[in-house]
View (cartoon, rainbow, N blue to C red):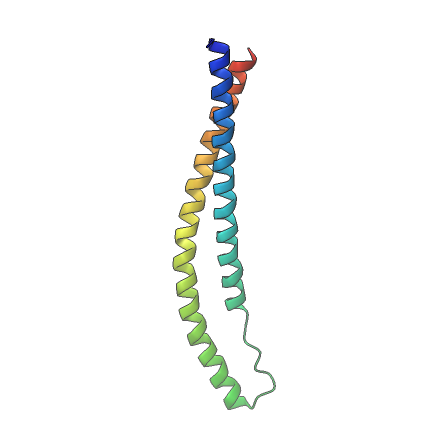
Amino acid sequence: MTDRAKLARLVALSSLILETRLLTLEAAARARQNSLDRLAEVNRPSAAANLALVAAAEVALRYELWADQRRSEINTVLARQTAEWEEARQEAARAFGRNQVLGRLRDR
């Protein structure tokens, strides 16, 4: 096998690795965005406008207690997802760089 053929195979492998890394990054970004959307939903104020003042205050207090717990759970998941997303982004960037370098070497 010639050096040119070996380099062409390396470029093909590099392209496959890049695709895999990009799919991993896309999945991590989607999961992270889902958590951000859920957090935004929890942060919306509760709608207790048609209740008596005391009942509305009680509903609002109970909602805030529930929302605080939910925020804590979502933020824990979000922190993990953000770390995974960042790692996937870095891996995709490295794969892209390798693919570009190999492509340039092949084209010489």
